[in-house]
Length: 453
Image (cartoon, rainbow, N blue to C red; front, side, top):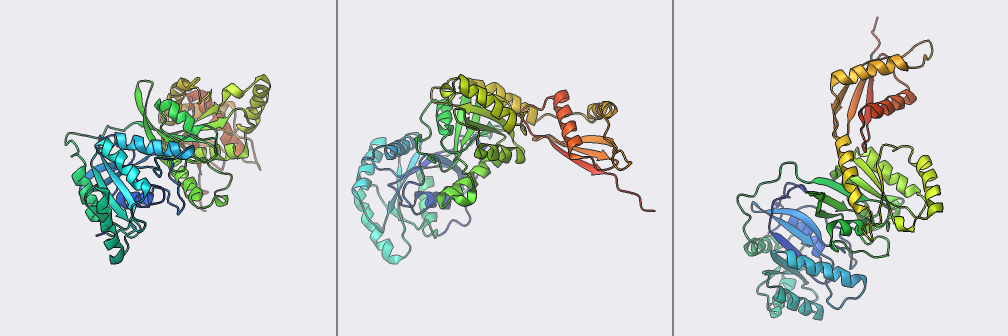
């Protein structure tokens, strides 16, 4: 039985306390492929190399009308050291917060010492465990899977994460192990505000999320590119719940990335689209780079609110501050509207100052101007500073209306096409008059068509 009928849950903004399933196992047994099979879409980054998943990453799933949360984890080796040790610690945290565990074993390899060590940890946790014998693509492999009874976890469910074989029976067993979702649970109207943490590799995005969450939520290492999947985390900040999305560092060129890095960069683009506001993390101790500017452009082009956080401020001395101010004046000329905050994510210095700037950016992003007020403003603007005469003609703004918010989008009805410089002037004056802090403004124009004689 395959999972073709499996449908994803209603999306990332759901705050219903759905039951949690942790997916664990040693590296490269196919956990992320199986997670994609369970949730019915390609979300978890998959590559035939151990260690692609490094954090615990949550996804919404639905099977037989019941919603639950799937937590994918990095490969679990109890004897790991260094980065691998922290990945294993994330898997252990996932088991502690889960209602049930899906333990994935490679049926073609059989029981290993690592598998037996993981079983001891799972028994100690006291959580219900469903045993998935993965990579069972034919009858011969199914016979080999029965040897996994020796793990003492009950019936092994032979599955092929790649082809979907046996996944329906496994999902039925998962539902039996998970507690029922409370009937009275309802989605919070609107849900928490969604904030994507973006930036180039190794600028401190994961450190910032860990400090905001007040726990080691994401694996942090000095090696650039530790985060691969976007990681969602509900964070209490300023007395409210926010949904923060940590993302992989965006590289110079997507085409330069290979394998899981390429797909991770696509996931990051999706995280920007899914967010309402992006916190662009820049290493304040280093010159603003082409990569930084490209990511800022990506956020603005996506129409998302933007806050720029200059991180590692403890490393910024007086000389660096002087040059940084010059770089901001020169390089951030396209986004002078984006509020800036100086932080040190490692120590938590000034991290609390993110709340007011996030609120300001979201308020600007959702600002709507009444048609009367807008046209009164446009009338004054045109009277004070009319469009230059070009070729004996002077284009005029006849009427304007705001057609949408998030981001604020305006349509100007004109007598003829306005020059780009005049459009920039209108945007600047709109900001001076109405604020629009932290948000791009989209200005469109509709020149009046010439009447045919």
